[in-house]
Length: 173
Image 1 (cartoon, rainbow, N blue to C red):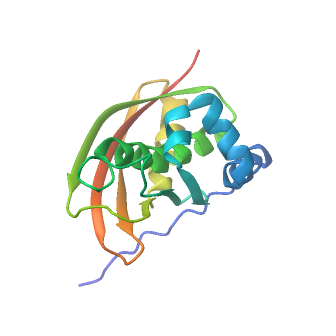
Image 2 (image 1 turned 180 degrees about the vertical axis):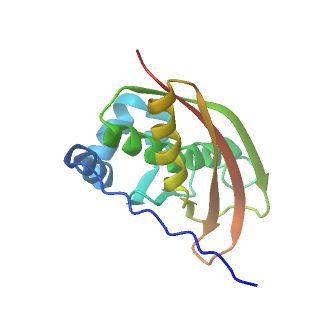
């Protein structure tokens, strides 16, 4: 039986999108963005460690600002980090599209597998799906939902949570 391999499409970022990517990776500029636009994320200490067209890694420190009474990271802080790992890819794709696109979370599903009591990294590796959905939304003018996965792991590799966030994208008029 012959297997068919799908060729991976390489996404080249526009200069404008590359500038945004670098700003998100700049600790000072990203924290300024959070302070102005997402103060709760700033307060919890979220940080983007890696961002390209395919992947995004967001760290969430364990500490008094993100913990619950049971000495683990509060589920809402984990949800915020998971959403950011998918949303940063969406913002990058919108910037790359060079056209106005609206984005909205329409569903979120989560499974918590272990107690998160250390620095946790949420990783999304489905950037291509986001870029494709935005491209479809621009071509059709219709709402395009896309379900994106983000996995939270502690520094020792232990998976603590798995999120599925459904974004809806639509071309703005």
